[in-house]
Amino acid sequence: MTEPPIQMNLARHVLTAGATTPDKIALAVLHPALEPEIWSYRRLIAAIRGTASGFLQAGLVPGDRILLRLGNRPAFPIAYLGAIAAGLVPVPSSAQLTAPEITRLAATIRPALVIAGDGIALPDHPAPVLPESALSGFAALPPAGWHMGPPDRLAYILFTSGSSGQPRAVAHAHRAILARRMMMEDWSGLRADDRLLHAGAFNWSFTLGTGLMDPWTIGATALIPADGTPPAAVATLAARHHATLLAGAPGVFRKMLQTGWPNWPALRHGLCAGERLEPALRQEWRTRTGTDLHEAMGMSECSTFLSGSPSRPAPTGTAGYPQRGRKVALLDDLGRSLGAGLAGRLAVSADDAGLCLGYLDQPQETAARITNGWFLTGDLAVAADDGAIAMLGRTDDLMNAGGFRVAPPRSRRLCRRSRKRAIWPWRRSPCAPVSRSSRLSGPERPLKKHFATRPRAIWLDINNRVPISISTRCPAPPPEKSTAAPCARPIPRTAYDLCSPRYFRRSRLPLVHDRQGRAGPRP
Image (cartoon, rainbow, N blue to C red; front, top):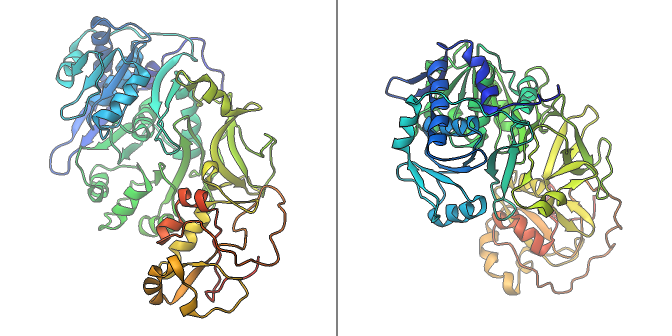
């Protein structure tokens, strides 16, 4: 990647290409039963720079933070880029958050202004509130100048999903937009003549980046379904408006494929992120559409850095390859790089342009994620000989079975392949023949009736420690014999209990099964 400029503004960078084609469609909001709402680049740029003027006239100064409480409407990206154009710091937030939830987040970021959409919960915070109706009036104001400055200065703040605990405020710099060029080359294959339809909402960071910022950066056209459009109708809208690329979460693609598929020749491929892409879904997409579905992996702290692409599709079962220009490594517990075939902690270079500045006002938390110049993503992964990286799970969800690192996705896959099997807690030796009637006793007896109708079982041996995943170290061998001592660990009631990382952390139980439905010694 080329060196960042000395002075830049993220919003200016995004809109420069579109300014050369002012009459081209920048954004079309698609309605199933109405004409689309069209925004040319001329209209879009005027609205963004006018909004920047409105913020400054309201008394805000560069560096002030604006909490966006807006719904799935064009006002969201206009306010977002308008704030950045003026040197302010927008903070997107989900419209689904309740008043207590957004109050906690507002206390973290201390906004100078809250922009409020109709019907969206607001925080209990002393910051002034600007209604969306007043915001729309800013678009007609004279354009503000671009607030230029160093690429490493704060541009916007995102909140993590909170999957590992309390959501954290992640501070991103203006330079983050520069890393997205590598995503276009090694993931989306985006071109200036593309019409990219993103099935997500305006106020989702995935939509904001892939669905809007990327097309606008190269002067392409963004298509967004109107608020309330069901996922099943997205494919019809895409065909009607000649979308060349489709983007969304895997769940959206799954719902689209469940309906009648309106094939159209303009479609080149699909792009997905936000959750794991199952190989079966990718294969179904290929069969139905004749195109490929390319996955990318990123996080709130860093834009996507692993992906498949039209020029280099990801091998089945992997997240793809590191994008060119990105430095990615797998590290052991001591921070040393690991070779192919060895599971380790996934990390990106601390110098990556797409990496955040850190967690807002949490320097210790930020420092804890950096080891030897690498930022730890919190994921466990393994690389193939050709560089493709397969995800094994989250490092904080790993189970420790007698010194073996065990990844929950493996057990989830076993359970999905065994929907009609029982989850059977077993306290006896794995080699001891046990009749069906004697396998459950004591506190497990209530499960006996439920399991009696199950033809096969996934056997769970509480005492024997058997590895089910790749280990990063050579552990001590498991005991040759299993004892029958009573165990007070919790017993899973369903397959979903068994697949819960929280349950595994409490019980540290491995999952064992074979084709005949019997548990056995270590494979």
